[in-house]
Amino acid sequence: MEPLRSAQKTDDRPVTSVRTRTGINDKWVGFFLLLPSLLAIAVFVYGFIGWTGYVSLSDWNSLLPRMNWVGLENYRALFQDFRFQSDLRNTLVFTLFFIAACLVTGLTLAVLLDRKLKGEHLFRNIFIFPMALSFIVTGVVWQWIFNPSTGVNLFLNKLGFEEPPVWYVDTRIIPGVEWGQIQFGIPLALIAVVIAAIWQMSGFTMAMYLAGLRAIPDEIREAARVDGAGEWQVFRKVILPLLRPITLSVMIIQGHISLKIFDLVVAMTGPGANFVTDVPGVYMFETTFRGNHYAQGAAIAILMLLMVSVLIIPYLVSSMRKEAD
Image (cartoon, rainbow, N blue to C red; front, side, top):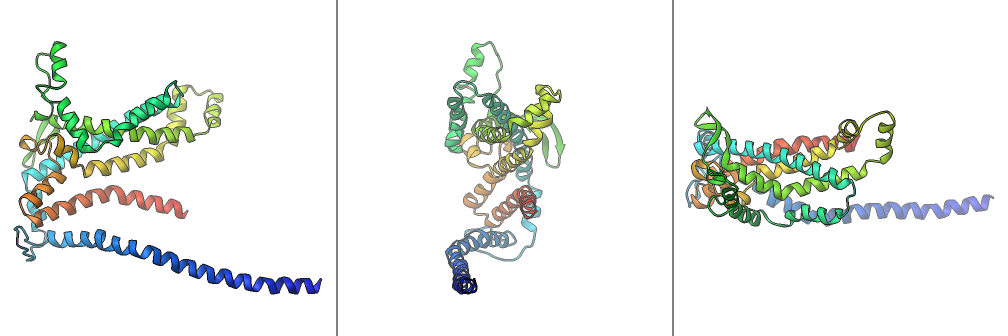
């Protein structure tokens, strides 16, 4: 047996040495493969974020670069600006209605499809199809539909509605409580934009919930039924808690989309009369590229980044902690 053991030891040494060298080489190969991407992200993402932040603290509000330091003056001016206050109100209203409606619509469609109805694949494709379109196309289509004189109002007139809604040209704000320089409430014109966004993104929510429902084992539902739970109790006390991670993910993704919404508003309504459908993205574009107020546009961009960060960073920290555990 001794010769055999010494032979095994002799064979192990070179294998261990080769694995060690291979592991080191793999690390360096992986590092150099990732290096171009890391440099590109450092320059074109974080570098430009830093540059935008620097410009927002200057007085560069003309075609010629002027980089005199003005501190937070651009931010102070924004929060006293009627249009930017209107944008914050519109973004808040749009985000709340958009996320809530997408969650309810997506969950309802997913529950219906999870019953394995005949033609499920057809309905699933129909519901997801709007995601294949850009927000520009969606905005143009829904602008035609909600046109007060040629759109859905023609059908409402035939049904007997003498004063149908004027949709995205309505300037009323309900209830219109005075707040700063603006009226705080729900801009009625924004409802048309919210409906268009829900039509496009509820299919994504449905797909997320449907995947979650299909991942729940039938044994869990059967166990709850055996314990005497009805169908509504099974849904409310078993299925909904298990779908909580998906609900959180959908809220993060849809919230991120709503906070930086731009193309749908541009294609459908623009800023609107009295800025009732304006959003920070549109304001930033017009301020920067049409008004040449680069410092003010950079300040709007930084504020949009902070709003998205408030939503995204807690989710990323929570996910990293779960992975570490």
